[in-house]
View 1 (cartoon, helix red, strand yellow):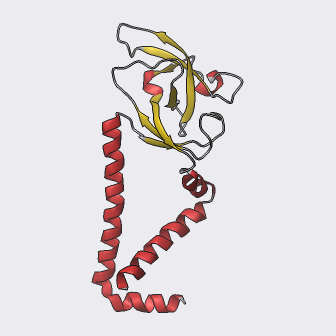
View 2: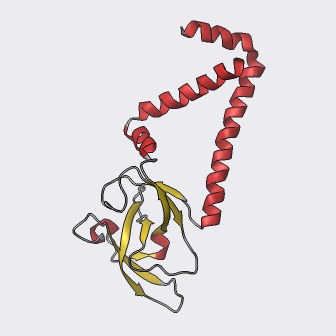
View 3: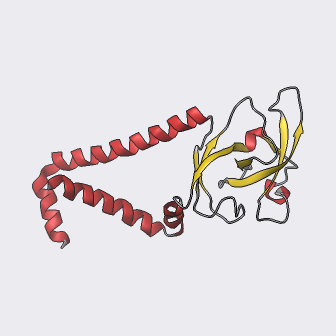
Length: 180
């Protein structure tokens, strides 16, 4: 089965294979540019995140895709759902603001306390020694969502071999499709 595909690749020649590799790289680069462009427009390092746990049920479920915005001169208010990252942790947390405190003249000089809708206690234990979240810890607030679309990301993180199989399969299909 694979012997025939390898023969086809050899027939295509090095130039054609390199062209396919460049096309694939172009698609990846376009996706990265769209990601960075969205980040600039929405004023956030991560304009799209996936909910990884059930701590925000029933507002959001595991696998929901969230769209974030981070308005620069607007303070956060109690009830808004934010995504934050604490120092030393790589995975952002999606929780609701339950308390705010103004710390200066600027409306965005504030301290925040968050809690998951499905949790009994606030997030103080998650802050890694911090008493409050500061604005610099907040990635953004939720502006919209698509339910369950992020399950693909969860599956690829839970099963890394699926990620490589999917990427390899897509690359192989692109080569075969181009030849047809």
